[in-house]
Image 1 (cartoon, rainbow, N blue to C red):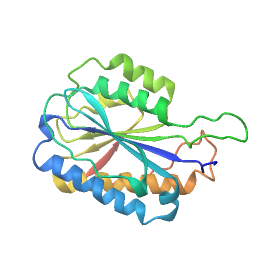
Image 2: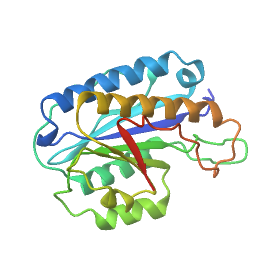
Image 3: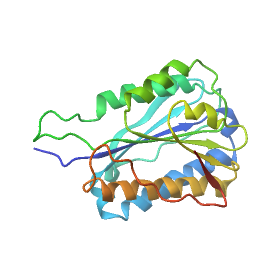
Image 4: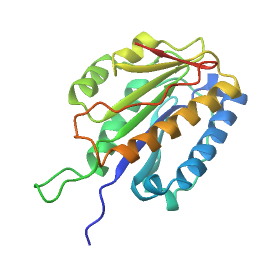
Amino acid sequence: MSMGRRLPVYLLLDTSGSMSGEPIEAVRQGIKALLSDLMSEPTARETVYLSVITFSSSAQQIVPLTELMSFQEPSLDANGSTAFGDALKVLEQCMDREVVKATSTTQKGDWKPLVFIMTDGQPTDSWESVADHIKQKKLGNVIACAAGPGADENMLKKVTELVVKLNSLQPEALKAFFKWVSDSIKTTSQSVAQVAADTPIGLPKPDPNNMIIVL
């Protein structure tokens, strides 16, 4: 049975100790809102497959790449340090395993994946070489979010040119970020069929009260 082309979406979320309390609860609510938003949009419902990778003292894929209809919200706990390098390695392994590559002109494979990385702090493991590797490999359209005052957008620039910054870790800022993520996914799922593989994706404007794009 030939499947339609999927739009794989990976959420790479920092669940270190500094996210505990209100921030991690806002992330939970953000994922819930993201899911219901995508389910209400027919193109997204047909094409989007979602995976969640979390990282604290180590990284793990807590939801494999799953179609929206079958997606179960993960339970998230915040503790430990920030193994950002480990997270990038897990991301690459999961994408190598899950994203369908084009095999011929007739079997086109999945659309270019969307990757959203969110972190509120500094990496506590070695990450520079794996960040360089991910940037050079061009695994997908990677968008990184420096959440709150403790996050380092310059570090995230080593992974991707597309970095957004949240002013704070307040629930409304995190909510605005997840709304922007779901709008970005919907925009991409509607446009993939019309654009060439290497065309840069057009992202919606972020909420000016809570988010800024760092260029």
